[in-house]
Image (tube, rainbow, N blue to C red; front, side):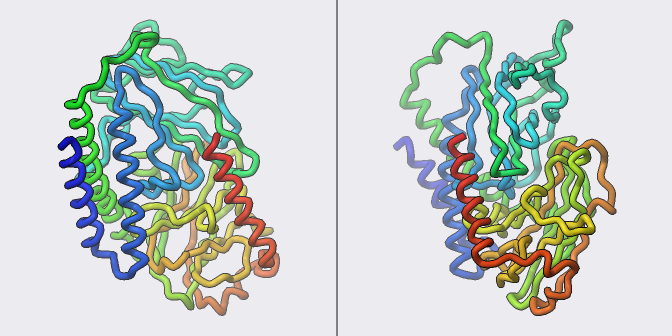
Length: 391
């Protein structure tokens, strides 16, 4: 049977999820099974998009196929490539806060992260006045122009991120990829043997994906003291122009975490975003709940600071970050498209306080929102994501 190994892989992935050490409640297990469903969908999608001779961009990470503490503000696209061929990426720049490109030499495994062989944003390419651009990736060439990027040895994947700061007004652009030597021709017809191989690959990818992103937080988060966040630092394995601050929390329902961070000026970091993640190392529901905020979405206090309030109970504040039943989880702030390196003073301070003492935080009254205003905020999120997914 062509699907036999894939079916066995799904069963193995489910076993890993059920035995994950953080599973304590029915909600933990239900979310793990939801994660399994999204990962199964994504791995099938990735296995069938493995077309290095006839490449196209695929989106394997989204609201229903989450991976690797996915950023609620980002559209992710990837294409498989080889280091001895040339690829042409054409598109039109949208109005999003950031558009970046990254070349990787492999995939994430339970033992290591892939190396980033190249990482840059669209400030490094020439874009026409109408927003159109053409970027080439390929072997070293003596006549390479400004929009040509040499593929390092072992290059296997091109990853593109388009990042939204203002969900309501920013619009995505267009992007395509092709190989000039195969454009206008067609690939060979598929065979049953080829399809069986792809099911096998998808199964191996699924088990590796589940194992990897259960191990990943152990490397970068869980060794840190609980209820703290790091100083801003280069994101491990990420973009050269991205910094992040990370941590993990453990809160009771009568506690709140107040995270205070300067609102970054647009000329320093056009994108600044904060989010929570579950112990499955994926984002929480950011469509129907406010589990994340960008710099444009957050309410900035008169002293130039953003004060996020992480709690289970509703404090009636604009910057409430909903835990949605997760008493433990991950914290992450990202700054992207930076024009300078960030320092400790640019990063967050963290304080855990009794929920009933939240009225003591600075500018508490200025941050108050009514239930009707809160409903408007959630409706705006739902509308913006629905629009973005059709973009």
